[in-house]
Picture 1 (cartoon, rainbow, N blue to C red):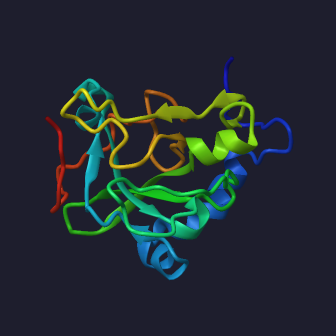
Picture 2: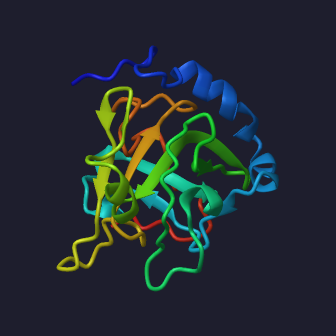
Length: 188
């Protein structure tokens, strides 16, 4: 099923509406004031760190709203929550690319729901614009962390602030880099 990048079905907001609602978060200080928290592990996430081809690109650094994700306590050992928030007019996660001058540039918004809580209340994964959220779960048989320190979850990225040749709803963007990140940038 193809996703309509402009219109929306079932009362979902259009991409233009999502962008208008998140525009203020281009300034990361506004995101912090609104309750978003920078990834405590300070990781700039790449496709390779999750066992995917380097050519897919990166995500960036995640800033998330613990209240929207239903996170109640620190990771033990993985981040877990009970939130089922999927409203892209108030995204649960903002993704930033570190810049050479130390600033952060907003590149995408994301929503994430933990599988256990979502499937307890819904028969199938959430969708946005007719496309099911991506299913993320760590494979304990690999040295990589395919779920980036989160319990099994469904997530949907929306690349509104950086054109993505992989598609507006792809997980990774080859036009995003972790080159200027001062923390962990696990690329291999």
